[in-house]
Structures are given as structure tokens and as C-alpha cells.
Image 1 (cartoon, rainbow, N blue to C red):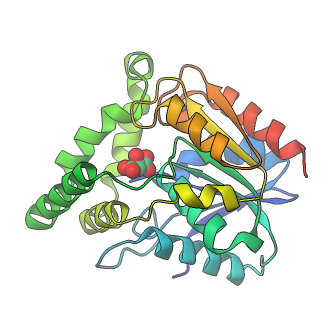
Image 2 (cartoon, rainbow, N blue to C red):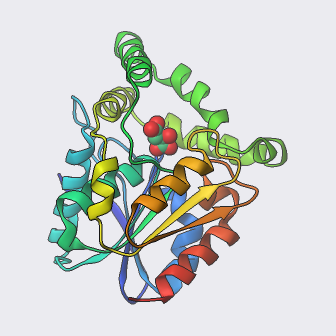
Length: 258
Ligand code: MLT
């Protein structure tokens, strides 16, 4: 499926993949900072933002195929840098594992290689079933919202929470349910990490309530060519909660050029 996307800036391509259930607008800081030096392509993954939202299960590998198809349509068939946050990181790892020739560098933000535990997968299946029965994703979204942010962000920047809540609420209920089912079924890529040769940056918010710093560190250590950078004053949404530190880490990594 061809995706909707933003495409800004000169220079080498950096593809940024958003988290769940957000959309490409979460990269607004990075479009101007990173996008002043690099060509930032930020798609809306299927079901999110202005991309199409089909019925069914949104497998992570299908989301990755959409990204590759969209880059092909732009005639960008050589290796580029992929950066993904959380679900976007799962998609970036799918690309790195299944299309290694397309990956020049990898940026993994607030994400993990492991699949869902049985309890997590069950929880997602229950949430998906509730959404499918009611046609309303709002209770699931409301529950998710606070966990996305560092407690200090929730306290100091309630307007940021409102903005993200609004963004999440625009995702159609069937897309939230389809994504929950796809995330629950995603493969565990832990064993694949050792085969990802591309240089990688792993970013972790010091106050992330979803992916802890120790898990991010273990992922960085399992990748042959990776480093971990921690972001203070940020939870799961580092690019929004501390854009200055996030952008500095991204630009330092990208400047190396390899
Ligand atoms: C995300 O931010 O994309 C989600 O936390 C991913 C997930 O629920 O596994």
C-alpha cells in the first residue's frame, strides 16, 4: 500500500516512522532540525494519519512492506537511514531484518526487539475485541496516554498531552484494533539483532514507562555496531518531550555519514 508522507529537506534520506497510534505530525521538530540538513521522509503508517485504514490485522511486516513500496515509488531504492519510535522501531527492525540492503543506518527510539509476552498479547486482544464491539477506541487511548509521557512532562506540559490525545483520537477505531492485533502477533527479533550490520543508534528516555533503559541497553549491546544514548526529562516520546537532546543525538549520529 502506498502511504501518505511528508518529504522535506536536502541531502541524504532519513525515513522517520511514528509510534502507535500517532501519525507523522509527531516529527514536527525533527522536520525542521534534521530536515535542515537531511531529506526527512515521514510516512503515516497504514491506518494512521492520512494513509488508508483497511479492515483487518495490521501486521508489522505489512507496515514495513508499505514503507518499502512507498520508497520504491519515489525511486529511492538504495540504502537510506531508517529511524522509528516504538511501533515505528518494530517496523524499522522488520526492514533491517528483511531488507538489509535498504538500510544504511538505523535509529531505534523507545523500542524493543522482543515480541509481546503472552499476558501483553492477551491484553491487546481484549482491547481490540472491546473496540470492535463498541466501535470506540477512546477508552483504550485514554488509558495509554499517561504512560507515554514522563510524569514531569504530564505535570509541566498538559497542552502536549492534549495535543497527542487529539492526534491519537483521529486514528480510526478499526485501525487501532487492527494494529493492536498486529502488534500482539509481531515476531520476536531479538535473535536477528546480531545480523544487523548497519550502524545503529538506540535512544531511550530516562523516564520511559513502557521500555526501560536496561532493555534498551541490552538491545544496543546485541547489535554489532550500536550505541545507546539516554535522553533526560523524557518518557516514551523523546522527540516531543526533549526535542533538543533528541535532535542533538540524531544529528551527531547522522553526521558520521559512515
Ligand atoms: C508505541 O508507542 O508505538 C507503542 O507503545 C508500541 C506498543 O504498544 O508496543
